[in-house]
Each structure stands twice: as C-alpha cells, then as structure tokens.
Image 1: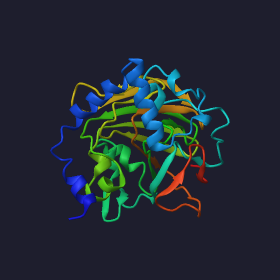
Image 2: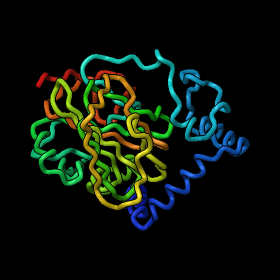
Image 3: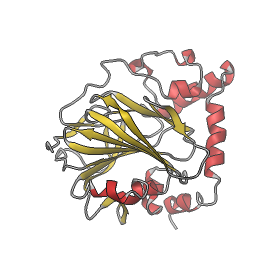
Image 4: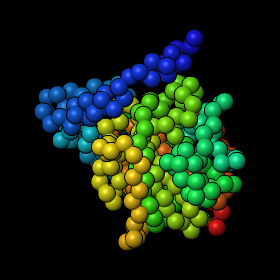
Length: 281
C-alpha cells in the first residue's frame, strides 16, 4: 500500500470537525508570544513572501488567522482577460463537465448535483459547461476573488466531512469535494450562470464571505439555502471570500470556457491570472 493511500485511509476515523475547531481556537489566540512564534515558524516552513503583503511586519497581525488571510498590495496580482483565477494555488483539474460529471483525479469523477448539495435543477444549468478546481496550499494567499463579474443569487451551506484536500487524498477518497463541508455560491454573469464552491478541509477553521462574514461552521447538520432578494454585485477581481487555513475552490460555468493551451493539471496559478476566454451566453 502506498503512503498516499495510507494517509487517505487513516483520515476516515479521525474526528475531523473536533480537530479543526481546536486548531481554529489556536489560530485565534491573541497572546503575542505564542501568536508570533506560530507566525514566524509558518513563514520559515513555507517560505511566505511578506514583501507583497499590505502589512509586511509579521508581528503586526493580531492573530495567526489575521496573518494567514493577510491582504496583498494593490499591484501584487494584476487581473487578466477572460476568466481570471480566483486564488493562488494549483489548477488541479479543469475541462468540460461531461454527462454532469466533473473530474476529481485520475480514475475519480463526481457529479455536479452532489457538489451543489443535491440540487438537480441547479446541476442542469451546467450540463455541457466547464469547470476548474484550484487547490490552495498553506503557503498560498488565502483570499478568494471573482473570476468574472457577477450578481449573487443564492448561497447554500452543505454539511459534510473535513478530509484533507491535498493531492494524496484527492487521488484516494472518491467524491471528495462532494463529501466535504462546503459553501456553494451561485452567480449570474454576462457569460451565464456560475457557481463558486468553497470546499472545507481538515483544520480549516472557517469559511468567510464578504457579504455575510463567517459562515462555517454552522451548528445544524443540514443543507441551508439563503436567497438574495437585494442583489449582491461583485466585480471581476473583487474579493468574495476567504479560508481560515487553506482549502479548495471549485468553479462551474454554464457556458464552455476555452482554457489556455499553456495550462496543465497541477500547474501553479496566481489570483487574477487569465485561465482563458469565456463565451458570452
């Protein structure tokens, strides 16, 4: 048995939520000595470039979470043409949504319906469309931005497990992104419907949005839907949410996206980088 498969298997009995909430409390610690020790150790371990942060002094952040979700300088991430990457990370998979299925990893697919919380009507919008999945590693910038300008129409909280979302787990846990706790954000764009799915993961303490603040964790283990009668309009490149300790973003587009030829699964991308043109709906 490979180490990757063993790592995936030992996660099944782990109390995902308890572990994540304990780490979340530590990440909110305001005791300067402990907080600064954690921040400095993290910067050394992952080679974080503080020069591009709005606040480059690592000791200036009140908590580890404030450091982890730090803002970048305005010119740090130019916004490209077409569909922009919503985050720094690795473009783990992308392409066409075939027969309502998205590719997770070699040998593993999962349904758009399951990803969207069992919403059959919503899933039909994306038949024949495209998807892209971006994995945010611990060293990455952890704010999530809009790949296209859009108006938020509905937000759906979907409860679930909190498996790790690194490459080893993605390759060995079937339906991973449709099993983990996640936040589904539906938008209307000039290129048709778009869903942005912020997927939780082990030791991810919370997911936030700019319009509602911290969303996860929620106390009730059921799908919760919130519709927006007053439009929430976000422009391309504008922040839409953030992870308190990294994870994955899955984007689904109702209209096909012509992904750039330079892109391959696993390539590193930055927020704002063009992934390719989108066809008008």
